[in-house]
Length: 410
Image 1 (tube, rainbow, N blue to C red):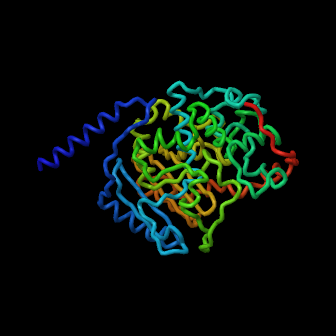
Image 2: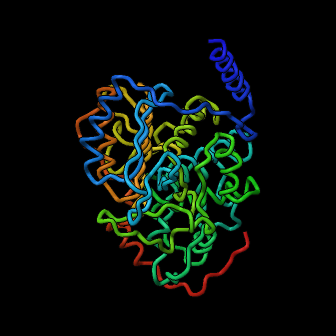
Image 3: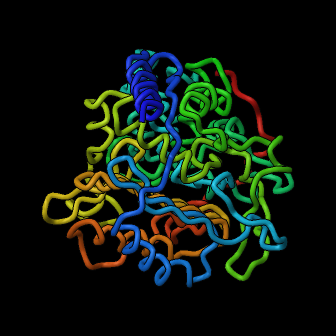
């Protein structure tokens, strides 16, 4: 009993000290070991996941927590479907667009520390930026009007045998100069270009490459040992993704850009980040409230509020009844990702998969009702970024060949 008390006091001391650290420095948060906490809820979640997810070809990992305690955790399938290896708690899978949350929080922390301002024009960071009037805030809430690089970098302007980098995306905005979709700040339009540029801004402000900055400022201090931003050197070790039929989903020219995607993590690591965020260890509650508030247009996927909207790097769901879900889904190649925070119940839902399975979005969506009265409709497959809408295809065709890519002084 004495030993247990000493250990508890030691953990309490570590927690208290870490909470006093300045957000301007690495967080240095010593994290207690995550342990499952079986209770009646575990049985309910086990039955639900067994019936709705694990029988639908799911290959990946699931973690659900309530009040900062893990109540359900499951690792299912293989890291490589062609081999006998098994997915474990240490298997890093790509967060796809769910990683935008981490990029956003990194930018917000820099803003809170006075290193940048959300109302800064992009011209402050990129000299002569050819789309005036766009601010950092507009990148975060997808109100910039910038076209999605996944669509405007067509075969006519890029050699598909070469990988596209963040710098290449920026250079093509100068040289190809695809038309903006609308004037800055007019409305919401989800564009990966926004977060590619945010990563570049973080690099300019911090003086470090985005992968290194995220590692030093967040991953190492929070004990996220299995989390990293993918770089070319990780090609031999990064987990592969697969089509639903089990075939390998090969990488393409867009697999080197980061900020919009390409953060690999585990449910446990993402939960560590979530706990730090929602316990006020990364940014202040006031800035969090701003991040979790709808963008100025309040319009998302042609659906009116109060159901769907987008804050600063976070999707928002506000169903009738006053409840609120802070979340971000993701898809890239065969990777599917879900992160959701049920505000009222303090529930965190994390699902990561590397075998394409659209069902995980609906499973996550419907699971909200296990904790409270949310809704009856199934959720949308929201981050289908690899298949552009008809309007996107039409705009992409309007981009003409621009000749050799030129570097621009910035």
